[in-house]
Length: 65
Length: 85
Length: 63
Image 1 (tube, each protein chain N blue to C red):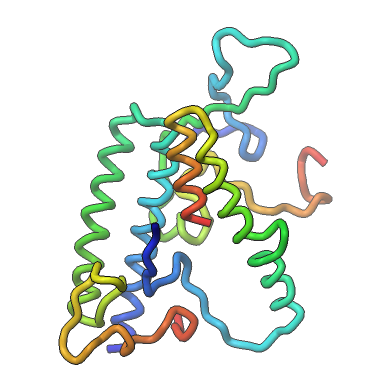
Image 2 (cartoon, rainbow over the protein chains, first blue to last red; image 1 turned 30 degrees about the vertical axis):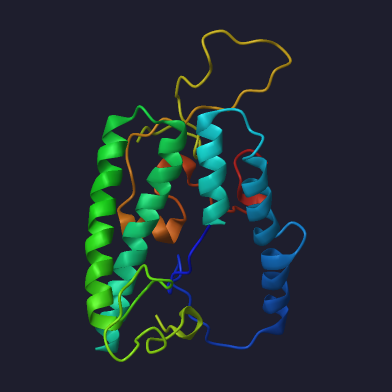
């Protein structure tokens, strides 16, 4: 369904080790209200949403997340 | 050389983000002709930039969506987390 | 982009012609101008009308 692209959406430069920040990021990324579960939620909700606009939007937002 | 690669990647990121934003907008505003034209313009520009990038620095996509020069170039360029901007 | 005395509030005709009580409505986006694309990536949106940076509560006009 998706392919990998060797590129980030936003330029990121990792220049220090910061465990406190890393914890926040990890939660945001993989936590229950994080990016990953949101993406999957969008992509699953598309199957039952009625309108064409919303199907497109949920697909594209889920992909973007 | 390294600097040029990063500059081109930055340009790709700029254009792709604009295209993404218009994509989402158009999902709920499919009748906006000006936005469709803008979207197509960015899509064309993005295709050209990526082609240029892949010729110079190697494939961006796996699984046959980007051709590779010899030797196999997929594993040559830095991965996103190794990138320095 | 239209300017108002309030940050990020636009005088746009966003409500449906006929509305009902006890229903929630979402303003329909009106797109007029875009940010330059480099600026858009940095701001996280291409659309000025959707730019909503985090502002600490004590600095907000509507606190």
